[in-house]
Amino acid sequence: MPIAKFDITESTCVPLPLENIDTDQIIPARFLSATSREGFGENLFRDWRYLKNGQKNMDFVLNNQAFGGKTLVAGKNFGSGSSREHAVWAVYDYGFRIVVSSFFADIFKNNALNNGLLPIVIPEELLKKLLKLVTDNPSAKVGIDLEKQVFTVLPTGDSVNFEINAYKKECLLKGLDDVDFLLGMKEGITGYEKRQNTAQ
Image 1 (tube, rainbow, N blue to C red):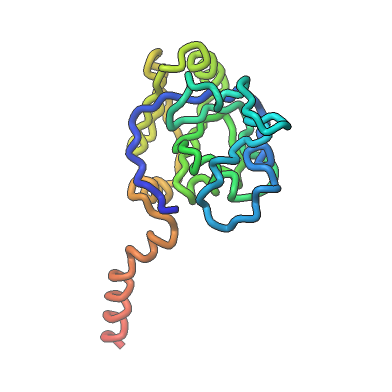
Image 2: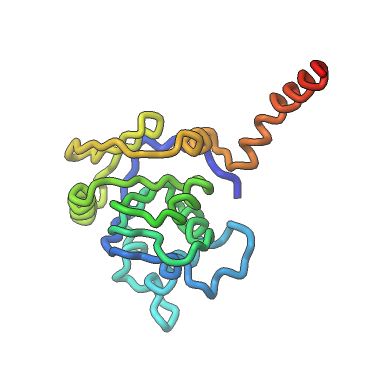
């Protein structure tokens, strides 16, 4: 699955006000046999989205048509547990491009940045305020300025800066993974090697 350039400036949100959501809850281990990133979205939060009889759990937010958008707003400590990259694949393949929380597990955060998903850390109090806002008003939007690293709750005007590695920010803005980034430097590397060989 190619990584799309990050060009989102506004988005509605899907609220998931649960803390300590681990990677097995994001994508259960029984769905990890595939090696391609495509198709994991259909099993995102599988055991919460579906009842044991296979029918949709209409009490779960992803099955509520009132909510949608590119931004998942989750409780503190999102993505804990095992280091499976499949968890990020599932979130991205479902259609989310941003995950907002007050804390991310480091491995999940790095996997997210490597796969075109932007994790934004905001203060705990603002997270609680945002979760209540979007739960009460599904049409409420947030603003994302990746270039300036600013996250804004548009209805209230609350705005915070978020941190991101400069290299990963460039990759997101250009829609590149690590391999694509290196391939883009091929001409420069080749030229450098030629100059070095000439100088010898």
